[in-house]
Length: 506
Image (cartoon, rainbow, N blue to C red; front, side, top):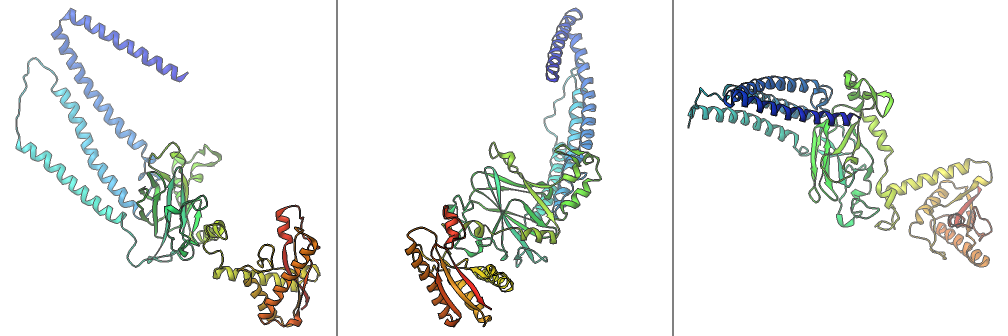
């Protein structure tokens, strides 16, 4: 209905304009063409002055009224250390261009009024005026020089790279340390990569991109092994942050408006930005609380006010395709303890997605941290079994001891847990165990019995070579007779194929 009324009003206004034109035409014939033209010129000239006043007043009023919706004014002060420099440049530029804008509009409409057509006046032609030429050349040149020099100084501050000698670390503690992360744009989203404990981001190669390696990380570079892919950007307040920015497909733009950071993400040409966040998300919310624009319910959550639901965000400021709008990502600035707590919840992409799968170049080895973690897990399980009173709790599965399919040859990684068991036997000299082998029901019962006995004996022999006395161990195969799960599914059969040891005496 509103649209219909608007269209109807436009149509009626058009009719009025046409009718006025016809009336004017008739009046000119009655009064005379020359007299009517003179009246029209004076009328238009006066309307020009009136329009100038209304236009300038409306421009100044609207700019003032909506200033709190513009970055750099009202609640939206910069949340980064360098942002105030850019805001100052914007305000200075606005000051000078505002003066030019007002004077130009006044001159434009004044000249339209002053020099309206008049039959009693003839035009003067000025071919050249050196003074006037100097004025409109020198004044803009001086102002532009001031703005360019100031802009160059701001550019050198904002676009400066990390200071020489600074060290990359996951949790910066001083001005000589910084956090480096990577942002990769794609249609339509961002992949954010954090370094691990080493504080360094690993190499990548676009030729290595696959379904389970979206960034093309080179797993032969060990710096990649602890890198983390995260779904949001979380940064500690006050830390110096360097963001590597790149793209997988088309041109994107990495835009952090509240921190005054904006740079293109160009395929094949990594760029970077450096900034230091100075306000946590919660501090910014408290700042917004004082402005009436944010003291109203959030349209998406009427139980909270707008200032309570505010969040920093990363957007793409490039028209990169029809899904461009969806490239919004949450950005959180927090205090260091909260940042550390968030880091503890993040996982290495390699360990959670690539480890022991196709494409893993380290399938046949364990890293030191994995060896330590498995040993800690084994020791904890053994301690619980030693402290238990129930007989069933005295049986411990050797989770990481495996054999080649259908045979009794240990896999390359099995020796780590067997070494842990050998060390435990040395720590507890009174410990006596039975090594038990079990299979699923695949194949004949006799073959499974023989296979389980052979596997138990292989473990027995390994422990003997490791220095465990033979009189403290026995080896026994149970074949398929003691399943712990169903043999009707592959998952159940995998649980039934196992090697255990039973504590006989401690």
